[in-house]
Image 1: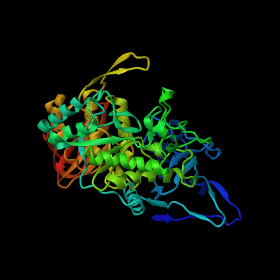
Image 2: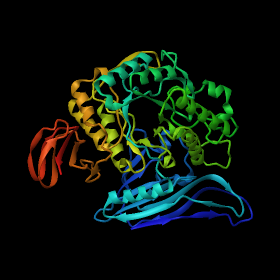
Image 3: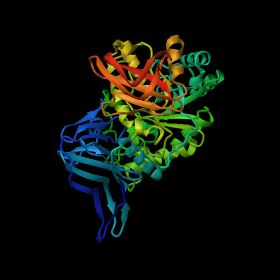
Image 4: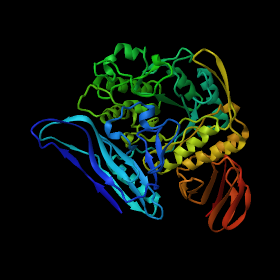
Length: 561
């Protein structure tokens, strides 16, 4: 059962009204307080799970309003808030999915406490004149026994309202961020040469954040880089590897040339001054970012000219757009009638209209629903790190979003790390700290299986010259990406299945701190193989039993069909 609602607000009075939000529905639901649910965050770093009476945050950054310091209204008091999507799984009943299926101007919220629910459209206290009306975002209600089918129906509705940007391949590559510190021209060249020799299937080098002198001054290179980015990009291409790039279009660093010369291009406070009292709270206040205004004509021209230069002069045909959430945070903008959703989409469209015709556009740290139809790929997890907290946490964030892969965009599960690495980092006090990898062999196996189960992009985060031959073989096993995300049997995310053209892949995950027995059902008798080695492990009929799967470990098998 699938129902769609189109609604609008009409001001039938003889005077203007400021409308903070519109309540589409409020009341008691026919569900017990212990009903399990999943809710999306407004942006990448936040997700929600648990039950209606005992909700919790998925991920390390708290609620949307905690991390980005977005002000709450009195209407949020004593209610739990999720954004644009709420999936309910009543015990012994059909699943129910409620979601907004468009996000052109407004953002949707679902607020609940136990069985009480409100469906809200955030209209941002905008003014609606007498006789004027607003078309609100489309709303969907669906229920059924097959949860995956409900998400497929949602994706189809989202794509009707925001046609998906298509790209002919799932990109692969190597990312500088997790292994090349500091980033230098010679370090990039060395990895490019090694890629050609050892694993040319990766195709491209993603020159990640750190190449610019300041956030906002995208075309001014860092003094530690050793060369300008145009020369570096040409040097990478000379090896036969594509140079791919990074830009954080909406964040502006204090003291940057952009801020000093064009403060009027930034989101303002009530007094008309550049505003940075929102967003991630920095440990160093003097580094607190400002936000580029996506409604300011000159700011949009700046974005267009910047990415045009990267495209035409640097030769980039791949753009990772990071910290996109800063384009959709509250504040006062040049266009007083524009919502923050419109401001964000305006800034994104300026970039896409300039380079999207032949370049891959990857979103990161983005507001999810406002991003619809504007990217080819999208990061769906936190940054990775070489420790169990991040490896397991990224899996918990990724798997509820597997349905999005190759439906809304290609999911980016962040990079694959396979080697133990030691970094030397400087504290705020100037002390140099040694930070070693903290992953066991079993946890590396878990991480490899997570990347496979994503079905999305494959990027390496290790120094290519230092990769062992064993791990080169692991990378080659994952290339090209399957494009098929695992479907899980339940929300414990223990058993995931990937149906490929000529074989069926089964992933078994043990998130626990203790060994675990896992039973894998089969629909017949098959010769079963280890995915990573192709070694035959035996013939099994109807079931395969994993006894005492080690803690923090995963196994991947396949059989031919």
